Image (cartoon, rainbow, N blue to C red; front, side, top):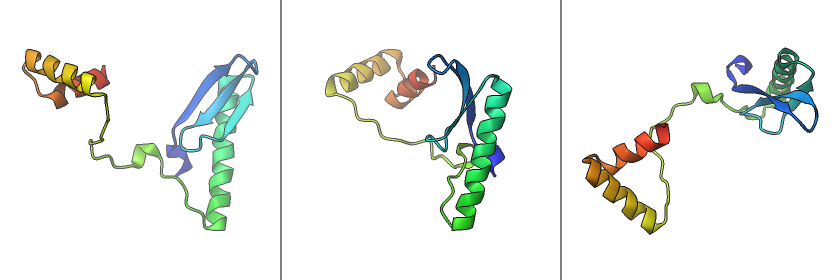
Length: 106
């Protein structure tokens, strides 16, 4: 399962090395001189942590890639922004949902 987690490698100016990260385990990181070594390092750390969590009977985070999403979530905005978006949607002759979805995806 740990091969389905979301990994990212980015440059750390502070450390002057690449840092490997895993979105499902935000507290973990791995520094290395190359991107490849950083990715391999964070994958190893996640693999070991998952093994340890399994051994201890702890709940293991489900990878984002295998989670089911409803496509719905609630966002609270100030009334002025709500009004502005409703007006924009009306002017474009689309629903508020379609307008906001388009803005989020761009």
